[in-house]
Length: 323
Ligand code: GLN
Image (cartoon, rainbow, N blue to C red; front, side, top):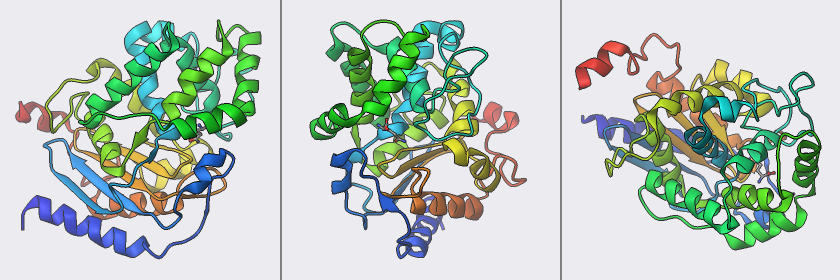
């Protein structure tokens, strides 16, 4: 049996196993998100040698929400370097909810770029003048990573712009402490637009595989991100990607990952795979219930936990012999 059909069999079996799991609720605090179909469930895996396996509603589009955060962090690192970026945001897990209104009391920076405060600080670094240019640059780069052109869901963007007062409060807190500078509405336009990027499950797995493949899209072969910063991004995904569930996730799944409140999860197995699950029913922490269950099962069946003895894909010797 080819490795491709072996992976497809595993994807199918995990899909079947959790198709009936109906716990969690579709997020409604951004009113437009409440229109998602709670039954949708898709899984995709893309390997760094370009094999793509999917099951379920993997072509259903949804807004990327917080899964934009690691990619925005990468763009900030490319544009401002480590020193310039880390002057504005830390790399410490907060252990708190994604939307908590808090800064590190010692440094006055947001704890990390995976929570809203940190992502808004990052948006302030990658915004441009005029504001549309910064959004366009983000959308274009994400399109290269996905291997197809992507677009913003204007209805979700409008919905969050009208109702996102908690994020506005976070931004004004940071403006007060000098973490961000300039126009709050322009910074939030960049952040809300990033969150409103439409992707499907297959795109998300391709985005993950591009990180796994040191910044190059494994299917188009195009270099998308500066590889020297991929490790920075994977590290904060590993320690902070699931907010106040990050420790449990690292223990049980053991793969850098990022979740979004619309129900997506992307997980990155370094030098091997991008994995994505979409299912809009989320738990109280804003993480997809079927997403967590499916990723845990995939990691277990394929032996993907970072410290699993069978996981040798990222070993230095294998990397050398692949060149
Ligand atoms: N746009 C959402 C917000 O800022 C993203 C949150 C998330 O996906 N966890 O609230």
